[in-house]
Length: 254
Ligand code: CA
Figure (spheres, rainbow, N blue to C red):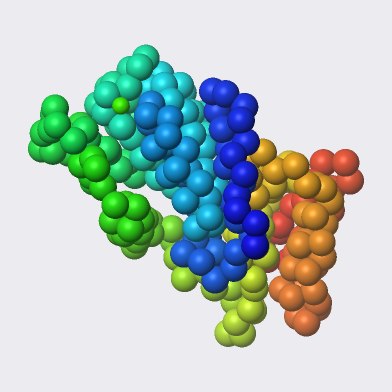
């Protein structure tokens, strides 16, 4: 296993996830945004979290952090308080005022410049004071993500095809279809937009890294496997190829 490389493309940096399997986030393609102006800390966090299997974006500027959190979908934002451009408090307040419910884990400075109650009042889900251990950070991230997963993610039912984002399980009628994490993630994305055409690049964006630089035809491999698993044994044809545009999962399950 090679260690993840840092991709330098300021101001946004996507850290490639490691190919390790069986890690914390292998079952779910979790996307994290780190907004932290201490570059060494941000870089170390990004590398560590990428190695855990997260897809990680990183910026050192508050305003850019707000922009990214508003325009991209993240499962969690790790947000420092004292930032150039805009403070973490203001970033958090702006997001909440706009109805954005992305979980936020705030990092507070070691000198206790601003107290934790204030941080929670702005709508942060949790906070962590510096210096913190990486293990504690990871535990907090897991806790925030677990809480969020319990709250939402209803089962998507398309005819007799059921896709459960919470348990990561898929059923055809009573029969469970066993899918790998990536297969499930592709199906989940198609199911969330059932009846609509979803392009290969949208699937890659959702399931792989934003800066995925492999062959986009990898999607075809996954679509083909999904057809073999969720359609063929049941004599169904739920995933249509829309030539030149992408794929469409039938809203009635095929
Ligand atoms: Ca700072």
